[in-house]
Length: 489
Image 1 (cartoon, rainbow, N blue to C red):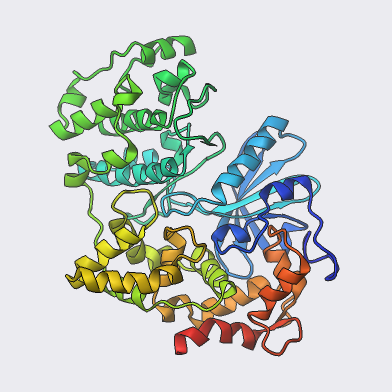
Image 2 (image 1 turned 120 degrees about the horizontal axis):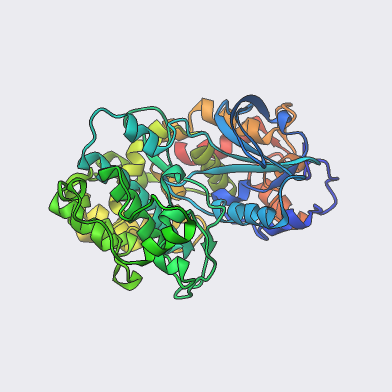
């Protein structure tokens, strides 16, 4: 396959304009180094299965990754049918998603193109839309609503901390990861999302009319528009209705009803809710966005605190975290590939719960202070906690951002016999070894990481971290040795 592997080894990779828009110019450990625009036949890497949905742009199909066996979703977008602004929106969405690293946000795996289509490969979320599930339940209570809303707002708190506004929060963009009764939600569709400068107001009227905030209609809004939309969603799932009249003949009348500032807080369905639920909804639907709470503040609201499940810090997870050591950025990159693309949601569940419990300011990352606070809770000894954190923080923070991301935490806190099981190591090796001959060549390494726009000298330095016999390639035994050496010390 591909734009990378087909190039001669002694030439720098040539990339298209679209590829360059997604490329990074240095080897910096992070999940995004595996997400780039690849060319070639997608069936070389995926088994194409049933159609999940169809739209004006193309199809969404269920696919299976040949090397890992994972089921994923493939959005096929016809180049002939997609308009220029839609194409730009697609690349904008990819650029946002490739850098997002949070459990409640849909994960983007890969992006391909051939002459006819673009192909976006994402998580397969087979639990359906949240609202569909709720309407089918025989019993539904505020506790369930609080649990789901907490997950939605956690995703938004992460986005807003990254200066990203979703701009189209609605029930159909809240999906369940699986059919399991305890399945977690995933926020999807970042096609209209935008990264903005702190304090900068937006002017483009965008979103779905029934969930648009009044200030969006007035073309002067910030991230607080997402809070309004979630207030409408919460009102809807708890009462079965909207907070304003929607049986009207025109879009303009819906907008007028939204902008009236008069919402139905006196209906039987609304007044039967708990006082705390009523007060939270009212605060989220404040007409003045400056009076609306942030997503981070809502996560500390009495209704969320009382009704939603509280994440717990696992002592076992913290013990694994304290043992983590790493010796090369190549090893760290491979571990992040395993954590992001091979580990199952079940294997991540306890790790995710601990991560979110430690994240006190709800920004979706862990600071050194939050890590110290968590270890103080485990050890009941702040001095011991500070000493340990000072020893391990730089090991965990692989991209030297000063914060620990979700995937960095997964890598460092997972039990080594899970993240580095023979099965997962074999799957990871096969992802690199495109032709299956038991050797990873430089072009194959470039193929999986071809979004990295660096020269041959730097590539050689990266390979040397694994290549112990100096033949310019990575043998299976060298790959395994690099991953397990630190563990065995």
